[in-house]
Amino acid sequence: MFIPRYKNTSKFAVHLSKIEHMKTLVKRFLSYVKIDTQSDPYSKNTPSTAKQWDLAKKLVKELEEIGMQDVTIDDKAYIMATLPANTQESIPTIGFISHFDTTPDFSGTNVNPRIIENYNGEEIILNKEQNIVLSPNEFDDLKLYEGQTLIVTDGTTLLGADDKAGIAEIITAMEYLIQNPQIKHGKIRVGFTPDEEIGRGAHHFDVKKFGADWAYTMDGSQIGELEYENFNAASAVVTAKGKSVHPGYAKDKMVNAIGLLQDFMQGLPRKEVPEQTSGREGFFHIHKINGTIEDASLEMIIRDHDRARFEARKQQVAKLVEEINKRNPDYLSVKIEDQYFNMKEKVAPVMHIVKIAEEAMKSLGITPIIKPIRGGTDGSQLSYMGLPCPNIFAGGHNFHGKYEYVPVESMEKAVATIVKICELTAKTTISS
Image (cartoon, rainbow, N blue to C red; front, side, top):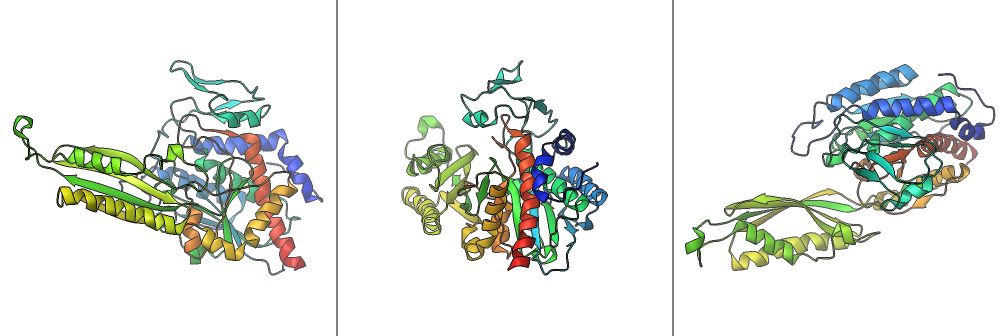
């Protein structure tokens, strides 16, 4: 791909709008989403599904082809690569990270994306046969992108912009920097991980090997998102043991395990659920339940931005189990496990890394949207592993389902933001 060399790097944003470059970015992204990389929370392997290797190997080859150095992939499919500094100045090493798995919540098999050019602001028929429609009446963010180019699903699978858009953006940005050496930058590291969608993306990430002073995950949604706060997170499994007796003779004898779980669910605050909370409000979320009279279980997640309230929520679950067991001794048990914590505690002492990203966006005409993540990223865990790691938009919307879409222009702006962060990191260091 030929990319003109500009003396004034501010023209980069203009160049990104050129048709040929847009086609390259889109082609790269489409090639990724067509590879099924759905992860599996019940697998004990890393990566949790063998098919994640298909994209991982492709990414290694592509990184080598664009000229990245020290390209490695370990036995768990963690990918790292280096773009060496092109100046003798002492500049911090920064990193950019994305994950290549897609959620187990919705099918990622046979993704058949469609490109909508010059979106007219009206309903998009994703699947005529199944009457699946992406409508601005239901998803009002669509109105932000009238006149732009959207990539949508065919209504039967997710798209995979979470987080294959992030990967496409990182590789495209590195390719641009390689072909435009007049943009001075320090050493840059990139990393791609498996199993982020099941909470394990950072579990085997070698922070020491990565060797960055700080990094950014390209895993946000709407253009402009810049996040350094996320939920404190835990999972819980509540198991009920019952006693089966013929229902006609069950009085004072039967113990229904399903009924015990029903008592547990009724004991939780009814309005503290995902569908009735927003912002920094926490919640309890039961996402799976199954069983019989003798054996039943439910799986749930516990979330809160505030650490004290988070700990109180876990205690609330444990106490509720204890109260039910007072009526039915030892029929109910719970296992609670922490998953990740709010990265704000680790990022706050180095807020300049957020300020650099904020300045990069503003210089490109992007309005930063700084808000807490109602979820988590690899960055939340990496921050506690010694790698402060805020999160930046990748451009997609409606993740984890058939209504997922991504504006191409948002992806282009993400590429420009990565390049500008590298440039500003160098300029800030040299001038200080």
